[in-house]
Length: 397
Image (cartoon, rainbow, N blue to C red; front, side, top):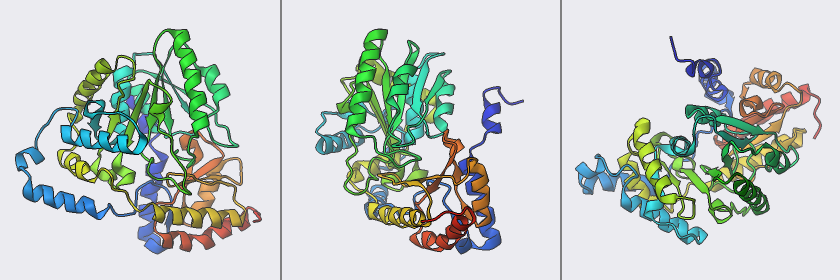
């Protein structure tokens, strides 16, 4: 018998992964070029050449005992310093190595942050639509996820409802910008208003509320858009970051959490988070990748590739009459379903060999998500299939 906690997870296994596995089966039947798989956010842009060069150089010239060995649970000091220095150059911050803990990707980082601050029964607020695993992460530590409904005009956080949802049990708030699944970037105005609401509630509660900023898509911003750095607006912020998207290294599982000195009782929180990193079972982030990041901290993937894909997919679907949110960042297109039940639309799209994810997987029913981190040729080939869908639903551009 499996545990009671695992039963709902097994029953509601990720629709994203299920769709990805379905795509693999369909490609075996119809051929790779005849299936248009927009399901999984798996970067298809190769990692920058500097990453490969760093790996080879480290393996050839550095002490293998160090390269493959343990280190402080927070990570190599030189890696953490390199990241802090980079952030300070880019955002005018004053971080140092001790503010950073290297993690096994962003998912591990969020779990460490939640393990550090949550008590059983505490509430964590997030904004729909949201990355589905947030709920599982919160429940891992016996917390309760509270979901704020979306503002479907802008997909900026619905702050009026948010303020009403805050209670004496609120311990943390999770935001994600640039956003999965909508591609929206939370504006400076939004963050200032959000911070003011939290400051007021903290004072009322007499205890801190932590703002956990999940930022794996920070480097993927288009049209000159600026992604505000959240610690500048709210002191009790914990930043979670991953190099999965910015350096196209999702399988390497490397990221960090950042806990600023300004955060209340930061010294104890950093110490607790470092221990949480160890007792979670990860022990420490992958050693080779930490050393690679120290050398490649300012490298980026080819964002122009994703921007070209965004323009092609968004422009093509809008021309056909689909209602889409134009992404400012990340690599997802949030498409309004032509019918109320988006799962019906997903099934109809599958008939045309198009794989998209139902919005209900993100607490966003009535929409679907398409990941455009695919080849440009896949987008081009998919256009006739999308046009057939548009014709079926009577859409007009």
